[in-house]
Length: 85
Image (cartoon, rainbow, N blue to C red; front, side):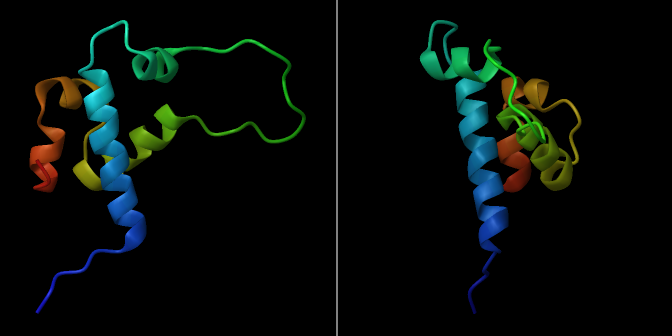
């Protein structure tokens, strides 16, 4: 009757859509600066934290079968492949 998708997949799709929106923002936007920025500071002990960009790349490869997610976001093809635009 209804088509349900797993919550984890739904979150991945929303993460890809938001990242596509940020990539297409103007260059002076704060979210774009944070997405592409590198931060300085003390290195924490233990396992390195995963970056948002690494998670987006894994999601794009798993859901869209796209290796270059930034070019897909700029061409606006990623959301259309998912049928979510």
